[in-house]
Image (cartoon, one colour):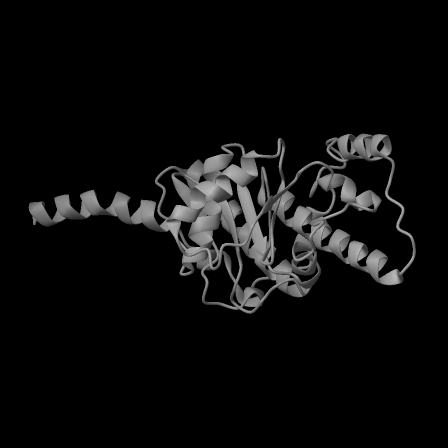
Length: 251
């Protein structure tokens, strides 16, 4: 009996570490609950705003030695806090998210999507162009990464990490002919960035489709707007997240 108890005591922390569960410290448990809720809210909001793709794509939040991430086998409109796992069923998720976290220790959350407008822009030679005020969030902060097939090989991680590090203050990785990833210091920050990035890509495509002569904002104006966009009251998610959370209920 003593041997059995010793084995249980030894294996419990390993199980907890693998699945991101079971903290003994109340503060850590509260932190995990809040993180799981934010991630579940982010999944449901992505579905609500038509930015999901069945069970695919992924959102994660850095947690202890790894991250909590999309389960990979559930519709996003049905994701609950307890569904988030310590490792995704989708190997692509682990490759992309691990690479971003390894490149930037300050990053706490990553969202990777294949939304229509952003994916279309990822197929353009010129890539993303911030034509509007909302694009100020991304001015000088978008890195590019050439598509290398399905991201199912861990050896691709260093190349993704290098792409993220190639742009100072990068908050978005435009994965050419693939999709994009946004990242930041919190789930709310990353999700709101992703929402605005898709909107900005829609604007870019409409400008191109109009047939008119496009007018880009002056560089100095965009640089000032970019700086102002990260003031505390305007930072991604600072004003929007609490209101967005009211749009989501869990059964």
